[in-house]
Image 1 (cartoon, rainbow, N blue to C red):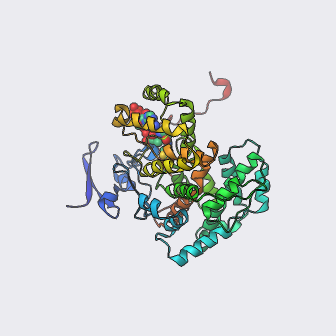
Image 2 (cartoon, rainbow, N blue to C red):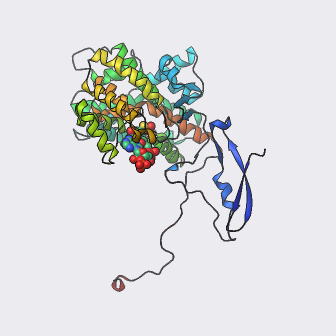
Image 3 (cartoon, rainbow, N blue to C red):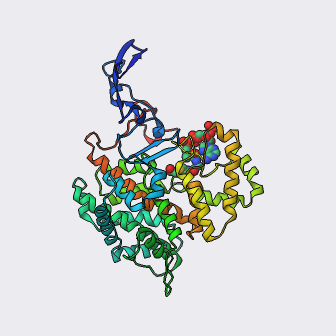
Length: 435
Ligand code: CMC
């Protein structure tokens, strides 16, 4: 059987054969090239047929070997490794290496990688001065987006994006500096002196120390809580062509330095429909306030008055495998930090929603944000830090997506088409003649 698609244009009766392109296996995605549709025309001066796909519901913008998601079966894999196995056996830094290099590191490679990341965790003292300029109540995500963009001015060589050695160095810097910027943004708001990165702690333990160490007191990150945050980081490290990865690739495709491209990706992440959702989940649980108010909340969601935050996903039409890991982890964390009524409200919301036809028929299941907010709150993070906690690990995924885009000979500057629906050519009317 030929691997082609036959298209008959009923306007002209003409027949076209277009090749079908496959991923590694047919189940990993199949597509026709959008450009192959351009030959379908009604006349010589016709522009040619395009595919119309607002919000990219069914458009593959790239081939990719980084992350695989099967949303119907609830599968997520990084470079072929199942997310649940990585969450059980790996660490965020190892996964960041995997995403960027395609393979798990050897002992020496991991040591080297960790050492470079630690070395780049400091930020230039001038960056601190930038951060001091923000208002006392500035949202930490706003601070993060602007500060990462400002890093562009500190590393002018970073614009040589086609040089792999330059790219590698910026990857160390970005992965290493994001926790520092994130912690400083929090401390700025709290009026605490900044705590500098500590080389003797791991990536996540160091971040917790920079966040929570109080002047005059030594801070020892709790191993179970540190591991919980590390798993949250690992689970958020990449998610194939989502809104922010698409922003990273799209902005990166015009070849600016990675700092401004990461700032654009982080801005995309900031929105409540993407990385801002875990913050919204917590606000929602607070608004509900008690288990007996859950049914009324569900009624309002079904009436279209509200969305159940942390539910539903563009890709997962099954239980998000990351939510499964975090649901279990929420229990472990709360055993240490002390229980909160929010977890009970969340469990009740989930129970009712998973039995309700509104959610079943629309295939709405808990996504990663449903439980991550509860854990982050239990770890002591204020809600407006939640999207920042998402951005810290996701930078590894953005960099992997960016690198893959730059190395792909088929990629060029991202430039979608449109179907124009405005007026046809008309003459300019002088202002005095306009009614
Ligand atoms: N609560 C209630 N109804 C919902 C929800 C929800 N959370 N999500 C989708 N629906 C309904 C929606 O109203 C629509 O119903 P109808 O067909 O009657 O109009 C149907 O389900 C399909 O929804 P959609 O908006 O067309 O789906 P989408 O693929 O465009 O949106 C989404 C995906 C994640 C933006 C959406 O499910 C949502 O707003 N969820 C809440 C926000 C959230 O949790 N976001 C985090 C996503 S996971 C993190 C990440 O990977 O970025």
